[in-house]
Image (cartoon, one colour):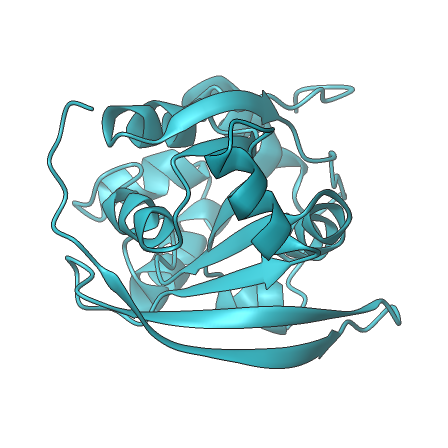
Length: 217
């Protein structure tokens, strides 16, 4: 572990039934936290037999599956086709429920720049910039996300090793640096549409995401 994390604790936990627009239903144990370094209201969703996965990994068994998912109001809630966030969220909930583990819902809209700035970046994308160039043109980082709170949340839940459900190598690198052992990284599906093809291509070329795209626009 290269960085010492301030300890976070579980604040509240409650069972919540989930239902998605396509009819998929499951149940989650939703955790809130105290002591997260950025003071934001991040959540962990325990899916499947998450408790057995935590106990088993503590005893030397396989680690739980975990996805840190950055909040995307436009994609997660309103079904925006400009990104793949909504389909990734839906996929992750089902896969984690089957494998047992946690979805960490992180309040990092727009790769950390916030909702209004993300919409400003959309306007720049409409003028020809890609999603990373647009952030930079606004004077922000191409990707400002910091997964320190994800590592804090996992520690509070008793998780030190994970199977990471992500296409993003930066998530694995940050978690490893923060003391979370990534035993394996498995990709999400490719949720390609005509509206998000350029966005996905930029994630591959600029962010090194592991996406097997049939073409690069």
